[in-house]
Length: 125
Image 1 (cartoon, rainbow, N blue to C red):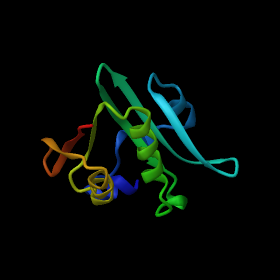
Image 2: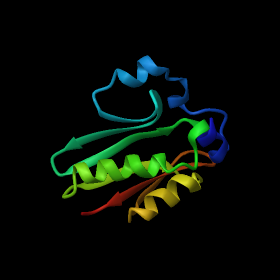
Image 3: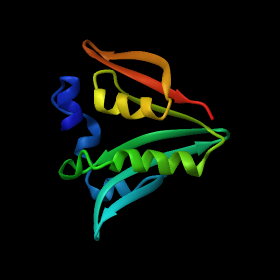
């Protein structure tokens, strides 16, 4: 719901997913834990020399602890010689700031609906 609020929409499709939906995926999934509880996860897909970050989720109770940064860093270290792409809402400033720290740059912008735009960011090795 946090991203939906940032983008000014009621909800986003990923919010309807439960743990079963999240684990039933063709993507590589890397999960962070605190004690034995999951705190965040990154979902990536590698094809040829490109890696897409499809989802990056952090439990709201664990915001501002560096979990998203750790997960992105982990993925980048898995594929150091690959181009990375990710899409996010153009008003999702926390996500944009995170990816900027890792030297992602604007690749494209798309308007999905009036007032809702998505940017695709790219990071070259």
